[in-house]
Picture (cartoon, rainbow, N blue to C red):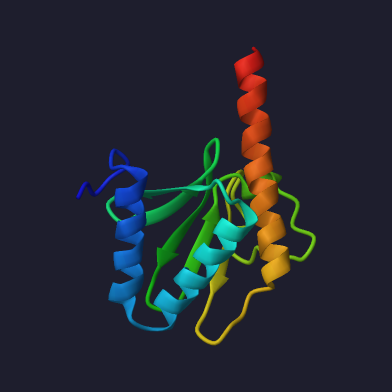
Length: 136
């Protein structure tokens, strides 16, 4: 299978499945959980696999990435600085001009409704930008 963005969506989804299975610990469970929430929030989301091993969820551009590290599962929203976060889920990469991230540690839970709203808002921002570009 292709290990970059050129693979099909089906290949990418299989690679994400494999990553979750390989983790075989709380990180795999967390990644699977947030993945399900992303699909619930944005049913037509597209899964891709980029940068030699990073799950990415897209709709008219990148919504977020799902990186796994020893101590955290990091969900980085590409345009997070421009997405409303009334529940204060963003807790990492707060100093950047565009990105914002949510670091999840072992034993933590995520406010599912707030996360899905954040994901929908990020997708809507991408769609609005894509529509305005197509008009110009």
